[in-house]
Image (spheres, rainbow, N blue to C red):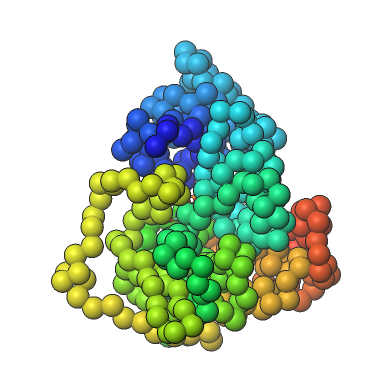
Amino acid sequence: MKKRHIAILGATGSIGTQTLDVVRQHPDLFEVDLLTAGSNADLLITEAREFDPAAVVICNEVKFDQVREALRDTDVKVFTGTQSMCDLVAAETVDIVVAAMVGFSGLRPTVAALKAGKAVALANKETLVAAGDLVMDLSRTHHAPILPVDSEHSAIFQCLLAAGDNPVEKIHLTASGGPFRTWPRERIALASKTDALKHPNWSMGAKITIDSATMMNKGFEVIEACWLFEKAPEDIHVVVHPESVIHSMIEFADGAVLAQLGCPDMRVPIQFALAFPERLPLKGEKLDFAKTGRLTFEEPDRTKFPCLSLAFEAVGRGGNIPCALNAANEVAVKAFLEDRIGFYDIPDIIGKIMAQTPYIAKPSLEDIFETNDAAYAAAERMI
Ligand code: NAD
Ligand code: MG
């Protein structure tokens, strides 16, 4: 494999730091050109000193001077603001852009990367939830491949490579069920953020961890799968699989099912996206089937996890409604993390915002930004 130059957006987060761990294991194959962060200046500085990128972007302007001063004795160029991130991902030397920022903030730079014809290793699922139609269209028009980093979508992608030209009837999207899988609804209603932040199998950023507790994360992944694999929502079956060993499955017309398995380690899908189509060695835990013992499955409980139904409703209605779903969820999760609302206020707020959002069947990118801003503001007023 020829050395690949990568830009990592959201380099200080859970996915960003694990991406750098993959780079650390293969210094001869990957070179970091760009690192960006929201506000975590200290970690961005440490990473820049280790990986010596051409440039870094600290999005929070307040932290700009700190980063510039700390890297003054290096060749690393320091920028701030979303626009500089959009300009830098388009640089000639960049081969792959890892989109690993959290939330709607990922949309603008991902669009910029696709327009520049860059391969995008996509972790930032909110981009596809909010603007899947437009994003997939840009990927096709600019011959810019989107390589899934989300473990379920990477699993489906890996299974599809074995499917050849045979049509896939159904996708089985596995879900851990989150920390509240076995809790009764009355107890979940009183759950605190500390309870919700205890994910049983994965260590992730705070927002996606809450999304996993409400199962909105799985709802988002249904929408993400619809766009990535050109499937209707009714062809996607969510199944709870608490061990998180099967990362997802595809089913053919004859009933045969292909699955991708492995230890829950995000570096596997990250590395697969970065090195595609090659497979590289990776240091880490490997599956021990006898130790795993048993794999179990159950239906998700939609009365306990109404966010899952809200996501199906949003993708069913289409247009700008998934964008409103995403914006309302972003505001509600933030408020829950600040102890301002209860757990079931999250789906309540989202449902109300979806119902009051003026429907646009074929939104432009501008419509998407307007829908996001309006839904965001309305959700904040409601809280
Ligand atoms: P995180 O909160 O740990 O990290 C987010 C990163 O984005 C940080 O570097 C942060 O500085 C940056 N950031 C935050 N707000 C920003 C803004 N407004 N502008 C620019 N940068 C900003 O999140 P994470 O867990 O790494 O998740 C990142 C994305 O990957 C999310 O979309 C999540 O759904 C998806 N994802 C994560 C995992 C996982 O295991 N963590 C798995 C699958 C998908
Ligand atoms: Mg996932």
